[in-house]
Image 1: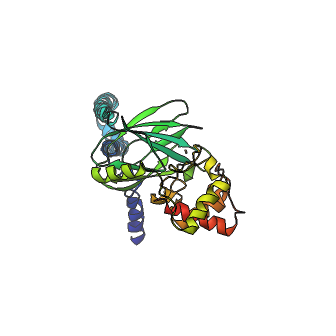
Image 2: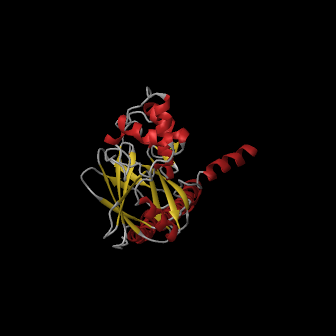
Image 3: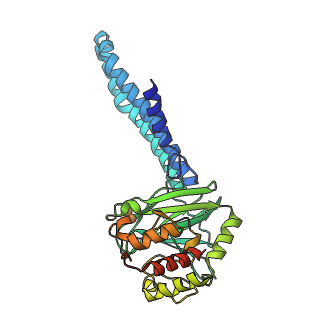
Length: 323
Ligand code: CUA
């Protein structure tokens, strides 16, 4: 008995949490989870009815064979599927119309580009320079925001289960979806299309905030990096350039203008680095720089495992400062 309860607890905990489509925190995810519950309940009832007929049907047909058979075939084989499937079709059409609705709001569009194995995110507003961040998507609660997704290498799939459905990210094509979070919190999205050996290490942190907190965050992300403070961080900034990190990474406000790797302008303000793989603190940065290939097999960034300790700790000190 205890085992059964434990099993039930394990199964049910899978329905909650930061990456569960059955614990919706967005309008579209709510639609999808309602549809799922109705379909599961409907098909569960149908299964029970079929089982009941399979068990008790033969006894009934012996009695009044011909009439019972006609009822079974016309009722169970024609009328019942027509009614059930039509109801589900209409219900599905209704959900589909709401899930595919665009906000059409000209104020803010978020462009997300998938790459092996990280997310490049641009906040685009008319009259403003685009604001580039990486691997951490911030959204205002209660607002519907249009998102345009694409890819720069292979096919990825953008999926934040608690907020909305999936959308393929295809090279050379822009697909659209809209996100409308309904409660604040930190959620987890993931790439939902196998895209190479580190596909499982391509997570996306989604931070849903009150609109004014979101605006403050966006305004801060739009600013350049703060100047290095302290001798260690200043040496770190120099070492960043002498080791060529700037050929791949951008740090706005400095000479680092590379575009093939995540923007690091405010990397220290993020919760994670390497697309949800490590914490964005000194320890995480150190692990990532020295052990890239171990942490994310196939990653395009080479591991700087031979970096002298003083250079490594200075670079880490500088990046951690970039809040
Ligand atoms: Cu990107 Cu899987």
